[in-house]
Length: 149
Image 1 (cartoon, rainbow, N blue to C red):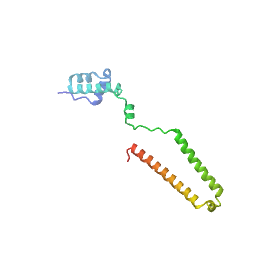
Image 2 (cartoon, rainbow, N blue to C red):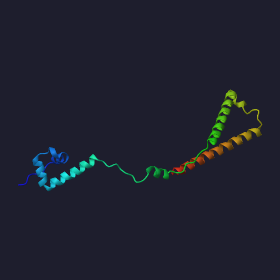
Image 3 (cartoon, rainbow, N blue to C red):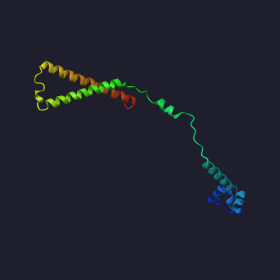
Image 4 (cartoon, rainbow, N blue to C red):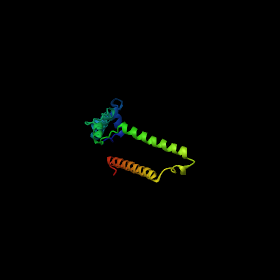
C-alpha cells in the first residue's frame, strides 16, 4: 500500500529548509513523482521571490510623453506688463472718479456736451467689445489645444 501524499506545508518546508525535514519526508519526495514536482515548483517560486528582477524599459517614457504634448506658446512679459499697467490705470481712474464724485454722481457728466459724451460712450463700448472678443478668441484657442471643443 502506498503512503498518502505530503501536505502542502510539509512540501513547502522541504522546499525552504531541506536540512530540517525528517528522513520520511525526504524519502517520500524521492519516491513520489507528484510530491517531487510540487517541491520543485515551490523551490522555483521561493527563489524567484527572493531575487526579484527589476523591470527594464527599453524606451524613454519621459521622451514619449513630452513628444505627445502640444507645443507651448511663449507670452512675452512686455505684453503682460502693458496689460496689467493699463488695467491698473483704469481701476485707479475709476476709483478716483468715485472718490471725488461719490456724493454727486448726477453732476459727473453735467458739463459735457452731448457730442463729447457720445464719443466717450462709443469709445468705451468699442474698446469693451474688442477686449471681450479677444478674450473669447483666446478661450476658444485654449479649448482647441485641450481637444475639448
